Amino acid sequence: MEKNLRQALADTRVSEIRYFESIDSTNDEALRWIANGAPDLAIVVADEQTKGRGRFDRRWVTRPDTSLAFTLILTSAFAEPLKIPLYAPLGGIAVQEAVKNLLGLDARIKWPNDVLLNNNKFCGILVEAAWHGTDLQGVVVGIGINVSAESVPDPVQQNFPATSLESACGFPVERFELLKNVINAFNAWRPELGSARFMHRWEEKLAFIGEWVRIEQSEKTSIIGKEVGIDPSGRLILVDDDGRKTLIEIGDVHLRPGPGRDTGGSHAG
Image 1 (cartoon, helix red, strand yellow):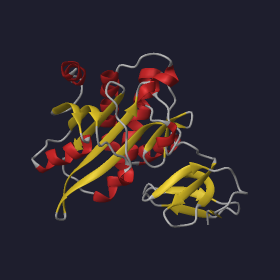
Image 2 (cartoon, rainbow, N blue to C red):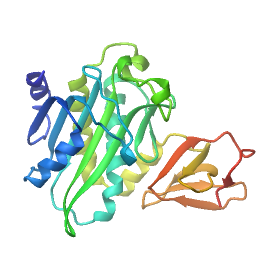
Image 3 (cartoon, one colour):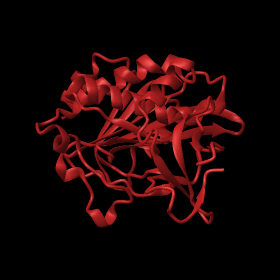
């Protein structure tokens, strides 16, 4: 399998590859690698993760031979650490574009770090920064993609409805060909990070745009509003019935489809 991986990635700008049949977490391995001098655009790929995780240490299930689990390492100079939150949508744009080009599927990016098909999650993205004191050593972009139907966790383990690529397209998906497409799209968009073109593409492919959504926050009342876009800092823009805007910061928040105005919780405003 590693030979096939290396052959597939020969047509990318990946600098070094570490492949594991089984590992705790590709992000954890990537962070360990950065501490020992990982080059820019190195990649960690695993067939199975025993301690895969999403945001806030939620478990991300990666069963053998069913998923695509990898972490890209970015260690080139970072002039603007404030752009770190934009690497999750960069991954989302790359996955959305790869799935469209390779499989003809119209995926959508759920703010801030998931990718959906027909409002079902098939991809999660976890971005983490590696610091040495106040110096940014690098950023890792972990991406998990449900490829086969066996990759989808049991409904009781899902915190959002899930699906897989093969369930959506109806035919087998070659995982490393998909990986190659994601990496090439990522590299094509990386120089555009934070640009007007980048923000337009993110907003253009946003899930639930123009729809009522609910923002759930830890120990706070939920906010309900119509999703209308993203501001230049990557904050989600919600509008209430009176046209008042609320900007939602990336953080300990969860976006859910909103049933409408007559639901409990507070409106945006």
